[in-house]
Image (cartoon, rainbow, N blue to C red; front, side, top):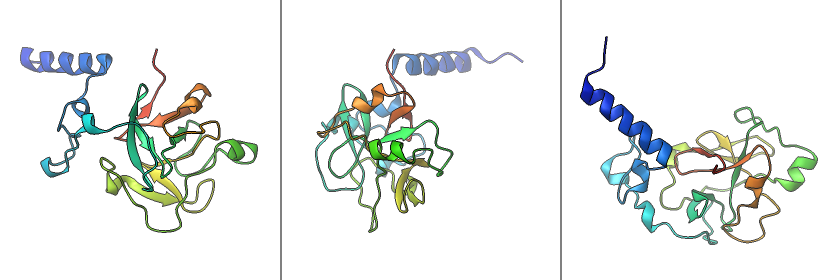
Length: 168
């Protein structure tokens, strides 16, 4: 059965938007398709990374919009993790320490509360976002640095739990 021309055109437009990096989340006031109008976020208003004291917040740089920790440092996910089982232990953990919180988790604008959790990953009370264990990279010495993306298997995490792959 052939798709109707309008359905085929909308599918092609959606695919083109993904290829060109244009998504609903890049438009002022837009939200993820599962969000409601009351939970929209103005992603254009998100600025550079800075220390906020909030457990998770969003920041924007040339790399895109990504999740940061309370000190404004970038947070990463690891390809080799299996759900909430950390593959980063031993020496790896000295370079990639887990983001943990023994108290209540506080959130900045744009972080979806229902997707934040804690797990016994690399350490007890390791913070997760969209099911991904979160880590800092010791090579990032200032808020917003993303030098960890140069290391194979490590990626920034976007606002919708999207693993941000390196730009081609």
